[in-house]
Image (cartoon, rainbow, N blue to C red; front, side, top):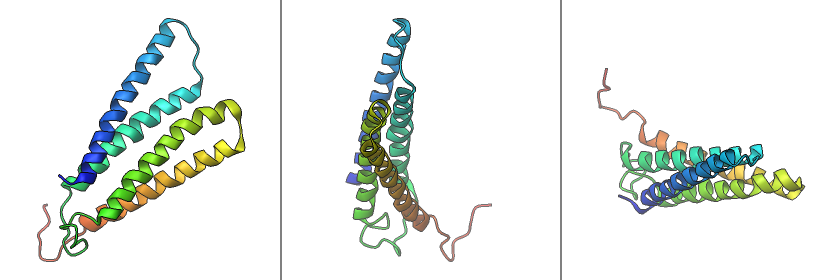
Length: 149
């Protein structure tokens, strides 16, 4: 299994644990009748959906999708290593910036934190774009192969 794929999968496991931990904190707060702001639900959702689900999907897809040795000869048909690493770092740095900036912006309403949130979204969007480029190159129709009905 390629190193970058392992990074995606291990990071997803960390975010899964953090998501459950924050969920347990929510349950404790509900039990103790401690009010929580909506922003923590958004943080929880991003940890679970982007941190766990998107990381695991990207990692498994980069590992399991069909090879395309014409498009990616240096990577054995998988991808260019720098592209996969860009996906990993852009997605996870963007996510970490979002998880920090979301609550801070909610409480302080400073424009700089809004800019950090915007930059985090741009990073995550660019990671998704590079990932889609890799995936579409790997699932294209190859001349001479029969498609399953």
